[in-house]
Image 1 (cartoon, helix red, strand yellow):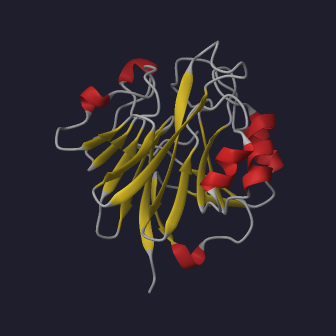
Image 2: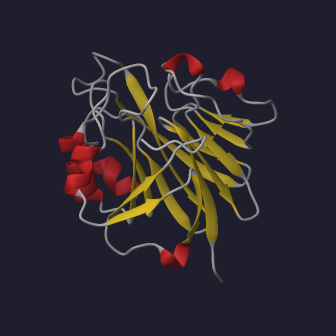
Length: 221
């Protein structure tokens, strides 16, 4: 049976994933203080990896969702979410505290959302994450991992699809590195001229492939 999900990039580090029969899962919504327009944030499950202002705008999400924002294993809307704590910086959280890495399975896709990690996670975390189909990776540096760390992470995890985040976008009002340097490290690329797309499990690439897409409302990086 063909299995598919819908992926939407709402800007910065905010994504929504929806299974064929639900649920819809929203990760790390921001508000317009970062300079980007805010998308409609409706969802069934809301994942908040940390409480920094560019990732925790839960007040903009219509009520009725199940919130996952604490470490541990939580079952919400029939999905098992593993929320694994790690550092937001290279100094064991002394600079920016900690974040949560989220791992969950949705309609046959094994997904890892790496949040704003500041360094490559320990081996025990990588082993716990397992073989990942879709990995969301910060690449812009400054308050999270930059290109060298992101490349090292991809080399170790070998996810089938790499979705870059936390990098410089037009209208973003704080400084981050661009996606250009990271593109040079990824020989295989999939470019989509939209902010949403359907991903089919059987069509996923076999080797790590960079996914480049627009963000809501149809803006290129």
